[in-house]
Image (cartoon, rainbow, N blue to C red; front, side, top):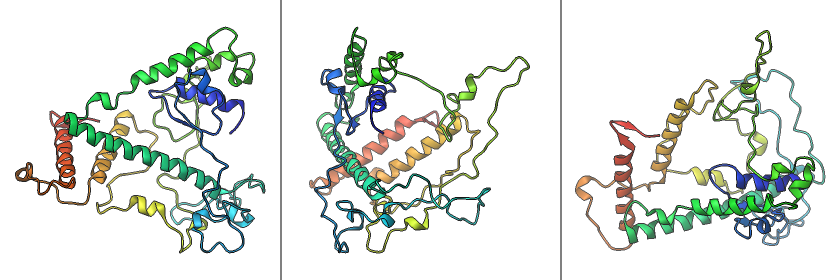
Length: 337
């Protein structure tokens, strides 16, 4: 959570993967200097609660999500996690303790984490809003689909990685990451890849057991434990929002569209093809959810604009988007994934 391992993490997320992320962290270390001011860093202020009203004795006039965050939170409100919520369809196979450990007095509590999480969510929402506006402007200027110049950032990724790699491989270069394991400073110079055994995962290729060679007798270790159940976890009753709280999750999922017919259970035998088909269906459902609750324009209405007030422009662009997606996603009667 803090210290030199965070510097190692910051470097690895830049080196690894297809994309270079925006680092929204309170501990950027010297990543800006080490990338010659090319990295994307946002210093989130986790301890700044000045935007919230101070909680003292009477907090009933303060929204639930902000109560006691800017003040001394009562111990009874700090933690709302439990180890097991009783359910009719599954019975726990061993005795469950009341709650997870480490619920210490000095911790700020779950509402403090929620406050910082929502600050991050607002940044993402603002970014999405700006991106959609840029997309609409780009389509109006250069037509559909959106020109690559508006969204291709591959050169920026390469540039950030090049600066960091050059700096870290320079003889005598120093960083908090390199002093974490003094005899192995190379871990800070290039992308690291590893295997693990945490489940569930999207693929089985990176399972640690796959790289263990059989013994001379042919024996090879295998993991016998299986998930007790699959599907969604029940929301603990202890986490039920009070009547005067705003349920942001309910607002986020509110829609006039019917619920998607998806199987959310996890099957460890799913191969890449099975997973891809699920992802494809998820994408199709997301595309439909993005559409507003209004009648879909038919072929005879393709070129009809009722008024030049911006709304009908969006309707026409949405119709063009659906037409483009259908023509590009259907190849020989099959849908791409």
